[in-house]
Length: 279
Image (tube, rainbow, N blue to C red; front, side, top):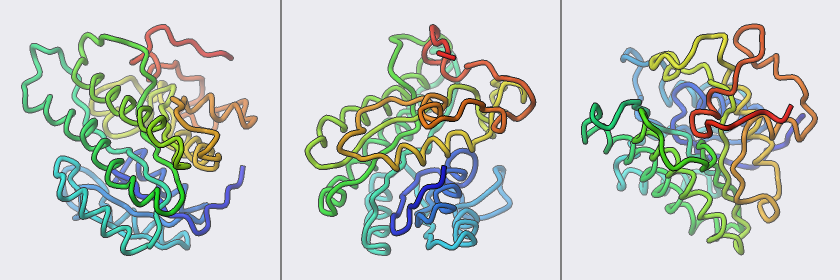
């Protein structure tokens, strides 16, 4: 489907690479202005990509973009980044909590500083970013808060307790906001991929092989559909990418697969071991 996001602006955390970058580029393709945020500002480090590279690629698509360095563990930086973005664009009606830290380990093997990292970036970062935008979203008459996090379906996750807690915490904050903001025309929803997505984190942590992954485009296309919906009627939903795309008539996801074949729902099952596709 084609969407028209002309005149809209999205503030996205974690746009240097992976899913966050693809969401930024996909929204830019539809005319949405972009605030590109993240920690990486210079090329040549251990990880590829910078917030400025994403900004440039968005501008090549004909939209306005601004890059703002942002460490989600720093409350002052979050506040300043939000203020800077609003001052620059005037109105920002889309807030996407995409950035996450990942660490998969047993409780006995994961030190406190790594627990603090995933908690600070994932739960606290989502909380503070969303909170910082509430007055602005109210003042402009509404908008969307969308978080890259899974449905809350489990009460334990052996082998990845800290990471699972932090991702489910992102969902908990977002879905709670849906109720708190229901009279303000501000939607708050989550999106999560059914399969593994081909990102650096997926490869680094050995979460399957290319046969198990889809490209970040499947998440980005799902994001378009969610953000195109009326915030007064679509809020408080924990969405899977496949289900959102099926709702708009997409029956085959083969174009998103990294290799031929149909990847298993490993990402959904990470937080919902009983998950089964409806198709």
